[in-house]
Length: 263
Image: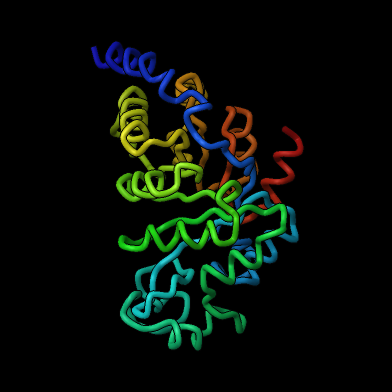
């Protein structure tokens, strides 16, 4: 019965996920995870520059907002791991954050400096939102840099994806997700389709462990683009490309580029 319900949902969703209902999906087959973080300190301008230099089609970053309203780039909710300061994110102004060393003398950059670096390159901004409360500010900044047709906003929060899509219908967004081994493929398909319907997007960015050829095929048939994170093993990367995965996020974009060229 569950399989029949999932199939019925899939068929009924085909028109909803038609290409003309959404902004064009920027071509990003190789996304450098937090920049070229396999070679440079993560989420720094050095890592993003290295990603662009190696030819990555996207450079992913994570954004948070400082207490003074400046949007800056950091993954964790605390500065301890990457900058050595046991301070919670969002509790201090960027004027203090910019003095921190994020590794090898690199600073924690602002979103503005990241967009400035990538604008005009072939490497697209892939922006992961880590906190509530500044969707409007993010959209305004992407528009100010005229990157709304090339940037992609990604988020584990379907509500925040929905908010960005409402604010900027021209901006491509992806819902980030992962699934454990307890859930069936039918349930995964149903969950993805239902969530993407609700947040009005047609891109899912999945942890690669549960991705199979049939899953990719079923989602593609519904009009959904399948992206995967974070994949560093060349054999896994090649296997996913062969399945039809359209974008792979990796700490080693040079490896993924080699695999993509083989594809």
